[in-house]
Image (cartoon, rainbow, N blue to C red; front, side, top):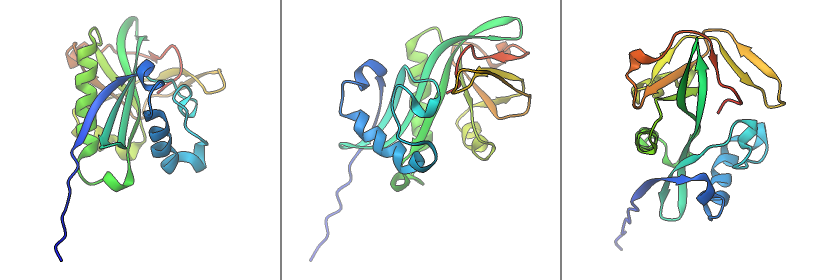
Length: 191
């Protein structure tokens, strides 16, 4: 008896949020996120992903109809020091357990960067993360910055985190040295 191995190509594509909410991807993404985070955060929902800011664009990795990964971003004008910067705030970066170890996360982040560049006018990608995943993002071309960060909490209250928490940026249309120095005010919820 011979065994036939069928390889399904993984396709990664950006999907605007408006299109996502009208597609079958919502249920697939809910399964992906709930498999990882349901016990800690409850059910995933695209408009309120665990209380963080929603995304304008979802970069989704699929093998056939199965969603294997996601990374999302939302455009926002924030203040940094005395200036303003147009960013794409990144969040919801997740690869299904069955697809880990295949460099899918790196491919997702590359597609995410292309989608930000293709959207026009975004100066930098911006994300906050856990300390243990900083090396992954740095390997994907992101650079850590040190600054205090102001945002709005899940319950609508202003918060300020001191310098030192993992914050990373990715030059999109501006060079790395154009990132201003000073307190970062997200002017809303983090991603």
